[in-house]
Image 1 (cartoon, rainbow, N blue to C red):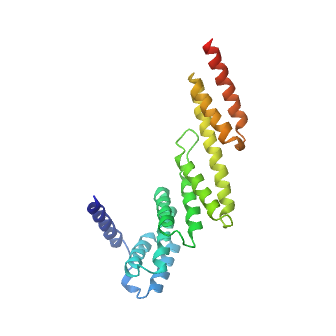
Image 2 (image 1 turned 180 degrees about the horizontal axis):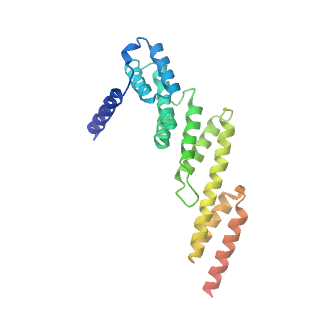
Image 3 (image 1 turned 90 degrees about the horizontal axis):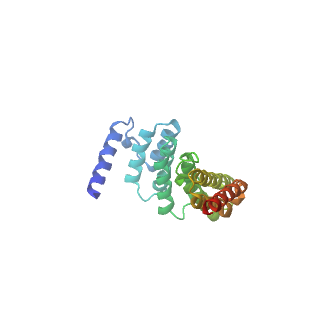
Length: 218
């Protein structure tokens, strides 16, 4: 399995290199290679940027720039709207470089990646929960970060979305006469998301579910 993954990665690298219009050999120093990567990214030439990033990491694996271009790769995936890949790349950066000065940025962009994957209240809320968790991590570790205000907004937005999902499910169960399940979902909103402004709606559902259950039990 490992050999297959390595081979697939090698073939992909060859394919990318074959589509590139740049030659890493033209850049004879670390600085010139790094600066050209910045140019390619700025121009939106992501294929060329990937080729040069691979060359830099291969030729200068222990340089600070080799670490920084890992973030560039994540940014490229984000700009290409490959948000799941971007989130994974930002997570790997966070895990592999726990003392890097750009960790707040990596956390922020990871949260934004999850935010871009958020769906409506009747859909799975996993990306929303991941956004909230990531934003909370950012706030806890870097409360004075330039991204703190946006992180707070994402936590608030995400918690409200999760609460709306719980209410959607509560109403779904209520309509199907599953009063116990409906009441349980409503209680989650009341107890865990009462500050989202949805507590009143949750209490109304809870009262309906309890009343219907009592009537059914007579």
